[in-house]
Image 1 (cartoon, helix red, strand yellow):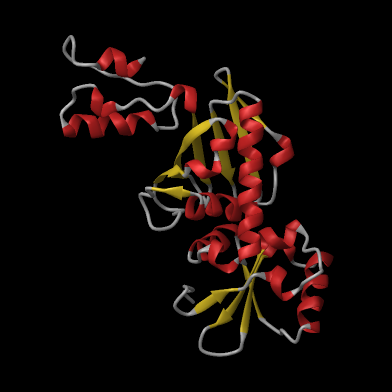
Image 2 (image 1 turned 90 degrees about the horizontal axis):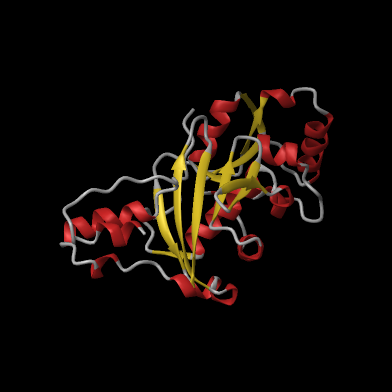
Length: 261
């Protein structure tokens, strides 16, 4: 059966079970869907939870709320495929969105305090990691590690509500997305903006990088380097690639040296 936002709604489990702490194993490996044309539910569960007490406890809590879903057991790849069919950020409340924004701001503040040049987000099928690049070395920051579900909410909130100039309408798990962080979210840390770039990986993995720009070292104004429009656009894109090596060539006095510096 094919699932999409046209046929089903992704249920925010925490809203249906208020006051109950949902284990990360359930958050990462279970999806609750509601049929848009009726009141029936479908519970998509990763097969590794078969006979797991946490799953049975969760199912009991749903039954107490008069939710008796049809259960479908799936593998990791199928769960990732079903998850990608829904916009996770839509299923969260405005309070959750605000909480996610606050977490993003906390990460940015910590990055600035550590004098990081950029922030790396990795959303895998079962976990979420944050790393800073400091003095050219990428370092994992364990204090920000979280579940994959919470990581998706955080990065979705960053892209959808804290950025402008998005290259895609929503953050995509199948294609590259680029954007610029609004200054209102970073100005208190001495930043003028941050450039966001995400790239999909294998088996539902999503990688995203935020390059930080301080007010004292503002983004180079490429258009001032006497490039014609097409060349300026090409050079501008290279500034925000999540890599640390680049190659430029051109005739003398065309601004390549200044741009590279």
